[in-house]
Length: 111
View 1 (cartoon, rainbow, N blue to C red):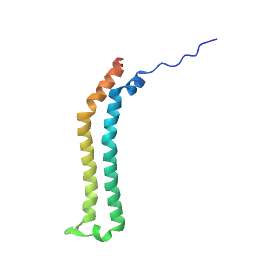
View 2: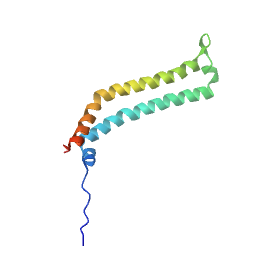
View 3: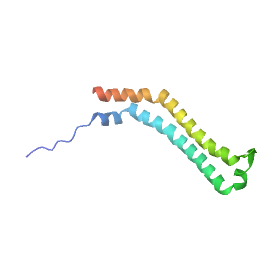
C-alpha cells in the first residue's frame, strides 16, 4: 500500500504566512480602501449633481465655463492625483519590502 504524502508548503505559502507579508498587505489595504472610498464618493457626488442639480451644475463661472465642466475636469485631475499619490506612497512604504520578499522567494531564502 502506498503512502499518501501531504504536499509540502511552498515558498509562496511561507511568505504569505510571514509577518512581513501580513504587514505589507495591511499597509496596502489601509491606504487603498480609504482612497477608493474617497474617489467613489467624489465620483458619485459628481454624477448625482449632474443628474439632479442642473441649475447648480449649469452655473456659469467664467464665460461659458460652468460648475459642471469644472467638476468634470476635476474628476480627471483627481484621478491623476490619486495615481501620483499612490505611486509615491508605494515607492516609500511598499516597494522595498515587496522586493525583499521577492528576492527571498527567488533565492530560496524563505524563512
